[in-house]
Amino acid sequence: MMQEVVAEVVKLSQLACSGAVRRLWMFRPAFQRLRDIWRSYRHRFVPWVVLNLSKNEKTLRQVTERCRDKLVPDEEVSRSLVKLFTALIRSHGPTDHRDLRADHFTREVTCGEGDEQHAGSPLCGQDAMLQSLGFCIDRQPSTLPSAGTGVFVTKGFVPGGATVAMYPGTVYQAYEPILLQSIWNPFVFRCIDGVLVDGNDKGISRMVFRSCSGRDRLGPFLMSDTSWLTATPHNPLAVGQYVNNCSNERPANVCYQEYDVPEKFPFELYQYLPNVNYSQDTRRPLRCVVLVSLRDIAPGEELFSNYFTIVH
Image 1: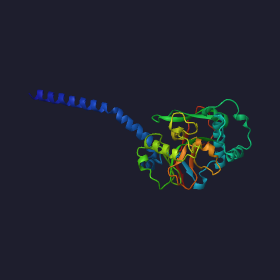
Image 2: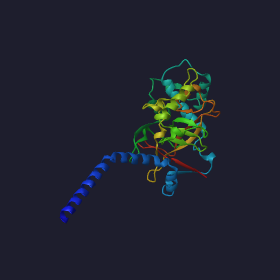
Image 3: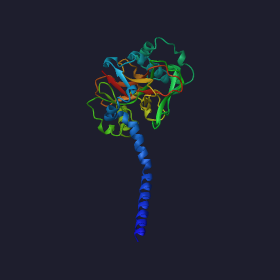
Image 4: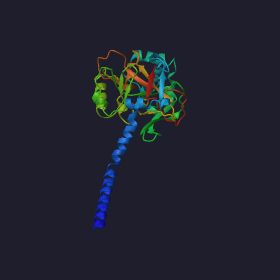
């Protein structure tokens, strides 16, 4: 009798265990999804960062002073952007809404380079980038496990100190509301002075950017580029939000640099800037964030940045 009871208990235990295993197996995709989200988000979770600083010192960028955060001068960044944007706008043919001040600034920053380099058939974004900057970048599956999408140099050669990409998104001053947009959003970039750039291309962030972009239009002039919200951005640089964080094994080859658009930046080229202010009455230059190469980068290499900058 006792043996029968023991056998029945063992049988029930086995059934219970198998049922628990089956339930756990059913939830396995959800657990894997949560794990992947955490691995992607943890680099922006401050408590995790603080606890892991000593283990990941090579992933940090050290800056002695705020004024020394820039690797290259803003004038050099402007020069690269104007060269690319001019090639893009000329590839679409002549326009009836030319701005004389824009032409003057374009000639000024390109140091008198001839128009012959823009002659010929219309160019796509990648071709214009290769012709004007000497390299191309594009989104591809990352070489890092569970990292999702990354950014790679696909053609040409990137010299050290070059403007390689831009971080798109809505620009928020430190006092402006971003709580709802920031929930489960791993694409909120914080500048040294507290300005935030929301580079998420989905959900509320997407709607906010489109709304602000339409609000700021000046007649025939678009004051920002919304195409970065799609799979084929007109500005091929506007993929900086997909650059993955470096590791101790894969050091950074690019770094973030804050760039305020100068007042004399051509109005007709604003249509390629992938950033817009959240508030229309912001009395300061438009903040953009660019990624600058720390060294020469060969074709086929993935771009890696430092997500964290420590200012001493």
